[in-house]
Length: 409
Image (cartoon, rainbow, N blue to C red):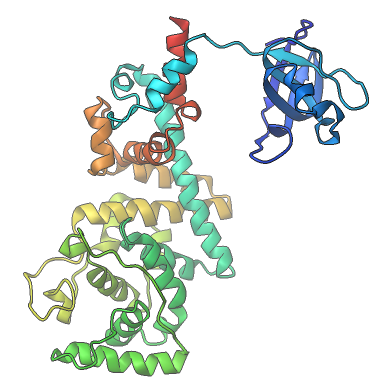
């Protein structure tokens, strides 16, 4: 890249995209002819748009250090008359058309579905590694945010993280709100009574309303216990948690998952310290290998009709909990303590797990992408949610690669 007068340009930092009034990119760093500049970057189709838009008399644009245009039809100056370096950025004439065809295809479930499988496997591996870490960083940041929110209490943060994960995506937000409004410290004061823990969680979830006169003795006891605990701890049911019940498998019903959370909290919640000591997939699986007791040994919800006895969590559900609880907690704790070996252990654990088998992963498998571990499946989930669904192909390394390859041809 060079300015219109021939000086070489190197972008050290593109800055921050500005979606409001003012220059297009803030706080960029560029080298022009070997000289470093820090400031803003403005982009126009025609250089003459600078004056047409009134930027030559606008002090907000005096900080622009580089003007990028498609057509160099005018010299641009700051309000004090200084000339601003200008660069012409050329695109293939049909680039916009190809981009629109990729992004706006109303039929294809994956914009680049016909081409992604043909990319160099080494390039895809590098891209998926970046995406997997992008997703892991987001989850670890959420854990660290919870630690900060609970004034450095890792046990409380892990409790909220576990609750969110038990929502299994469809009910993750309601579960997180439930945990935030039902502090672990209250539950642990009655860790010797599973009924008390269940009552507080079900009551705070708003699922006990109208069950006071139920013929089921267990439900009557839950309602009585919640009234007592709500008065003792000044608890108020969380409003509008918006539990999603439709199209949810019985074993994933909010009722059964809340019962599972209660079982984990019972016995003083040793899970927090055990997660931080995990060294292998086998140890991680043992954390979640449990059976529910009493009413929940044979029920999926509050229906009086019992169902067949099943374990609290299937092996595939345990895999998801390892991905969404153990790995991000280990990684976040390693970040907070500067423990590089624990960070590596968290990543190795993710790479050792079998991939998730969900609709998102299947989309990429149909496009010819092999998925051999959870590290890759997490990368594909990140790719789907953050780039493919919003059609941010220009921000996606794969989309950018495909478009640029077409330009070269």
